[in-house]
Image (cartoon, rainbow, N blue to C red; front, side, top):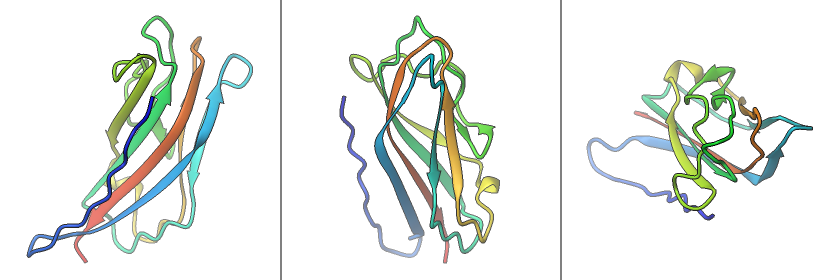
Length: 134
C-alpha cells in the first residue's frame, strides 16, 4: 500500500497556524513483539490547539484477526480491530481525532501506540497535526 500526506497552507481572516510531525519507517508487531509505538519528539505546542489529528498507515490488517485500539498518550483514539485492509488489499490509512486536551501548551513529546492481538501488522507511518489561532 501507499499513502500521501498532503501539507498545504490557507490564507485569509480565518487562517490558523498549523503544525505537522511525521514519524515514518516500518514497525512490525507480531506474536513475539506485539506492542508498537511512535514517539513524537521536539514538539512545540505554544497554546492548546483547536484541533488535533493523527493519521496512521498500517499494512497487513485483516478482518479475521485482532488488535487493540490506536492510543495517543495512553488514551484510545480508535476502536479495537480498526485495521482490516479496508483501504486496499491489506492496507489501512486512517485519520483519528486526538482530544486537544492531550496537547496542552508546552507539550514537547507525545507517544502513540498499537498492540496487536492475533494479527501481524506493519505500521508504516504516523502523522500528528494540530492547529491553533496565533
